[in-house]
Amino acid sequence: MPYPHQIKSFEEYKAAYKKSVEAPEEFWAEIAENFTWKKKWDTVLNWNFEEPKIEWFKGGKLNITENCLDRHLETKGDQPAIIWEANDPEEHHRILTYKRLHEKVCMFAHVLKNNGVKKGDRVCIYMGMIPELAIAVLACARLGAIHSVIFGGFSAQSIADRLIDAQAEYIITCDGAFRGAKDIPLKSVIDDALIGIRFVKKVIVYTRTHTPVSMIKGRDVWWDDEIKKVETLGLHDFPAEEMDAEDPLFILYTSGSTGKPKGVVHTCGGYMIFTNYTFVNVFQYQPKDVHFCTADIGWITGHSYIVYGPLSAGASSLIFEGIPTYPDASRFWKIIEKFKVNVFYTAPTAIRSLMGHGDAPLENADVSSLKVLGTVGEPINEEAWHWYDQKVGKGKCPVVDTWWQTETGGILISNMAGVTPSRPGWATLPLPGIQPVLLDEKGNEIPETAGELTTGNLCIKFPWPGILRTTYGDHERCRLTYFSAYPGLYFTGDGAFRDKEGFFRITGRVDDVLNVSGHRIGTAEVENAINMHAGVVESAVVGFPHEIKGQGIYAYVIYNGREDTDDRNRKDILATVTRIIGAIAKPDKIQFVKNLPKTRSGKIMRRILRKMAEGDTQNLGDTSTLLDPAVVDEIKDGRL
Ligand code: WT7
Image (tube, rainbow, N blue to C red; front, side):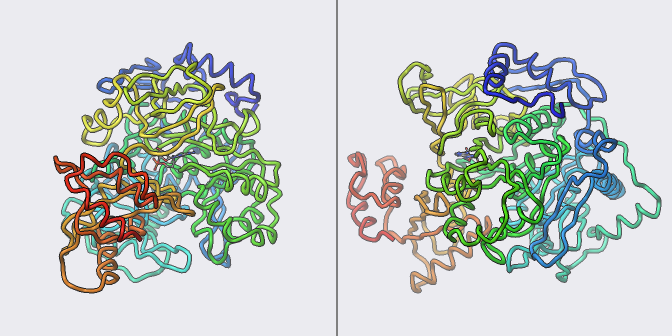
């Protein structure tokens, strides 16, 4: 039995679920036995959601990289750990076996150490999707440094904010990254981010694109030079730092309803166990399967289901550098054919976009190796679900709809491939260990017997090993954001339906957070960026349904700047947003308005703006509290 905790039938699922609720500590302790510990834990779980304080396997000593690398060397040393496909299909792919990956991680851990990185230091990683990104992440973990990966699409300003928040003194980056037909000059963005920052001690630069870069004496060093030094000394192994299960493993910044992203903190032990458990069960991974998760390692999906989940399970994990439509829309299918991919995990937005290219790109590729399909990041509409199931999976691959969040570390609600039932558009049942509840608008728990179909705000009432522990540097913010709306519960920020069988359908965010192409963007953050533009007086940002992206960004802007055409002013605002946050936060629509609909107390009535952005100008609901109802008509007339 390769995975002793892999559930094989619906009956086994029900039994595991029951046990996980009745005896959670025993349940998770049994699973934890299947990992390599330097020392066993003192207590399985200490918790209260009031502070909150959550500790799993406290006193247990381990290093996650021993679980992801060392323990596989004997039996899987020559198996691919990482399969890498370049942006350009003509460029040769790379395969790193477990032995090779282990060696590379150890050598780079030496490089980090030689450059001053110590246990507990924060290391910012800003790289493209190359194996060295995974190597950098794992090398930090080997040494006990806390990595904070920043997605390559974020701007210098966003990087600077995160560097300051995390007080990260070390940066690992690349000269540039290839993305479709574009080169992204990563090092140059880092240079911009560092203009006003004095505390960064070292920047390690990997050569990928051969873009000219500036290298500052004493601060910037080349990855390859540093590796050569280690090689000369024959340092191919690096003793894994002993970490407490509750020591932080990484920080990952994510957006919320305030203007400032927060650093979600995950710890070594619980996160490892949870990503491994969910990986093995949801995807029903079998030894030697090739697992292809298309996410970027800059997001939680990449952390959990490209790096830590798969590698801790000794899997072969595919890393793809490019984009789904370059050089054409058959790219994913050709990769599946080339590497005989068995498990394919992507976002609904990618599915919808590829569906839009018709069936021809799929017909030219052999995707018969596929066994399991997965989706993540946003609700999937039924049309896309069926296309995925029928055209990609040929009706023979279970589709898992996996609901989770950066904060949850791993999948919480999902069917398990071929083991528990699936239903289009439904994430279905909670995984063992997860106790979801729905709350009505008064904050009361809706009983499971309440009816055929109930709906409310989704909360979780018991901790699981992968739950966030804090938000970096501001524990109170963690409490306020997740544990104060409904005392005693973790609030997800999502709304959901539940049917009488206990199946969940996630409807999306109920707060001021948008989900654009599966990326989380706070409306307040976008507003702040728009308001930075010299001519902008005020703005309000809402989401609207977008055929491909799921949600698009609609901005209402009061403008009183340099006189020019609306089109030019729009472009300037877009350039400002790109500069402040990054291109991912650019509004799809900018409507210039004279006023925003406000209540007498000066609060913007977003509900009305949302309705109008959705194209519904009839059912605006109660507008009697508006200070000036005429504002609404003006906005209505100017709709884009
Ligand atoms: C938000 C979390 C989890 C990794 C990627 C996004 C939405 C996520 C689903 C799904 C419906 C989903 C939720 C959630 N979401 N998965 N299967 N069905 N909605 O992570 O950036 O932390 O965003 O994504 O709204 O709260 P994230």
